[in-house]
Amino acid sequence: VQLQASGGGLVQAGGSPRLSCAASGDIASINTWGWYRQAPGKQRELVADVTSGGRTNYAESVKGRFTISRDNAKNTVDLQMNSLKPEDTAVYYCACRPYGSRSYDPRYGRSYDYWGQGTLVTVSS
Image 1 (tube, one colour):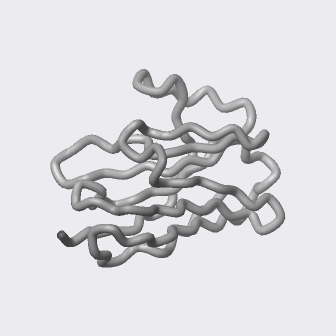
Image 2: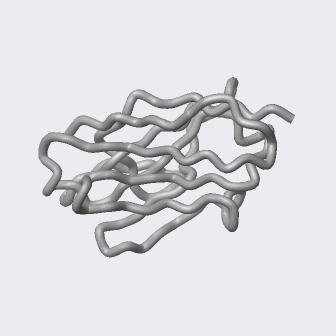
């Protein structure tokens, strides 16, 4: 599976950019999609994910501001970000996890097997 993320850039605080990630390859194997981010000097962290059944999960820091959505027909997953804050500045990565994956991250109970190249979102105050 190959993932291509887009939509990053320089945004003012309070802005509402939308990130998109397109998948190609063995699409049928994808169970869960996720968006992660990594700020300078910090560990990469999960922002949001969505399962094949549509169940979503969000980091506390973005709840109520970010929305993850998947379009199975288009093989895309989007991250709508609202009310951005300077602390949201990071490189954002999309990722996916196939059915049957055993990838594990002790922080979240599961990890991801395929990653996009990352897209930088810079929030100016």
